[in-house]
Length: 374
Image (cartoon, rainbow, N blue to C red; front, side, top):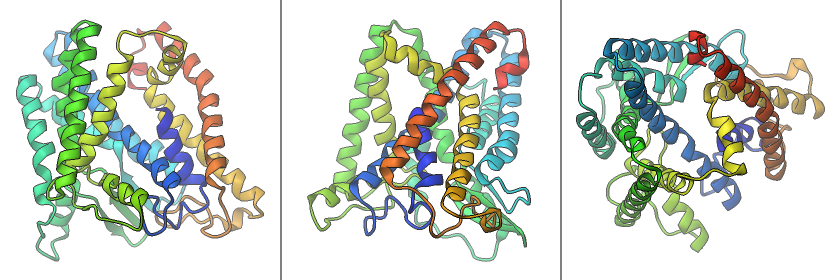
């Protein structure tokens, strides 16, 4: 949750965010590259733990029908939320030139599919998830027949990112195709049983899973044949060669992307298992209110962006709300990377009391079913 805010702060405020990809080795710097890379951990961990939470809900509520209905309603709610509050927080465009399917909707569609597959054993679902994760890169070079817009949209919706001009004034972007992320969620669902073991056992299992995932990532990446459409190569020096090695594909999440990010996340889980200290207790405040945090921090950062633009001499008439625009003028705005980090830490600090108060309110009103959805 904390490092996700770093990615959004960079997206909205960094001086080159509108003109430069941080993973473009021709223009990036090591600091900018790893500022982006570290935030790769967010989405796969969110989706994996969403699967875990679905499994834990099965244990907490033995009524199968109730569980399926909860997953279905929560999935539909997340999809609606994505294309309303989340998209408006991202674009703040009252004319709605752009809609994008991102991680919230991907989790929502995953819940909907999981509600349909709920009678399938977790072990089988985990195997299906692993098959998806390890095999979907076989489709990297598959070409679709041209001039079939419905087929192209469905293929993008399921397998790979794409942009579609729905109307002359509305573009729809598939940023998180459903199938690759569903694979991660199904594996998370199957791994939900791990949380039934004692902390010390979980610690060892997560450590082993993390080391296996990272070891497999290093092996497959070194072979450089399968697992990611972007191959690594020797660069101008050892540092940029390492950046090339680590430059893995998120859209959609390649096998190597999933192995690297979940491998690191498993190690973090292993390190935190069975521990309780001030740092972990503080960080847990954010994790107990994830959707609330997601929505509020997005709006805060976007408002900070407008303040930045106005302080740099622009007026309301200069704001650009065209397709795939945040409202920020392309030229002459933005702050350098150190200031991005400063704003990020400030946002995280501001979110702490908000999340703490909301978490306490939510815990005190467990009978309010609506609070289960936020």
